[in-house]
Image (cartoon, rainbow, N blue to C red; front, side):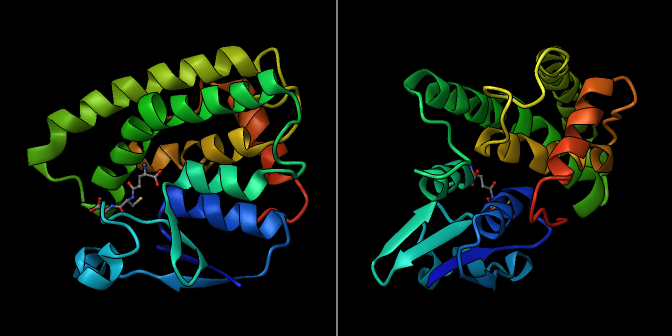
Length: 198
Ligand SMILES: N[C@@H](CCC(=O)N[C@@H](CS)C(=O)NCC(=O)O)C(=O)O
């Protein structure tokens, strides 16, 4: 049985739970206590030396960290991953975009506001994340104005990766009011079979 180590408040961990659920894969969920530093203890570092969640345990010896690598592993050979070489590369394109341009802004803004209580010492960083977050949303809006999903107009792990923090963007003070195509896409994602809320 697959085991997923994560925290329910985390969008990166939600990606994994959503894909496991939609693929109807049996799994055990292990909630990791980040507040007490469980992810920096030797037992956790043996699974992920980088000390971050999520981690997927595949067998006794095999641990896979990095949310988008886990999505790739789970989706391989399923309807959540397109068949063609170019389409698979486009899935990677959007998942790299998510990790480099989207998550570091939208997830971090959410963390600063919602989880860290918006300390004055992080206000400058927050404003930078908000600017970067809107820039990422502009790119998504442009694409979703012409496409119903990110790749081949079919729901895939690219949508799961980008949905996780986009649908919580307002937690970090990033408004979706000016993004009608993104809002319509969020609804399409939420209406997929076996969708679960974060
Ligand atoms: N690139 C990683 C990022 C994972 C990540 O940022 N995890 C956060 C929770 S969402 C974490 O473990 N933070 C604790 C830390 O970095 O010490 C992924 O996509 O899985």
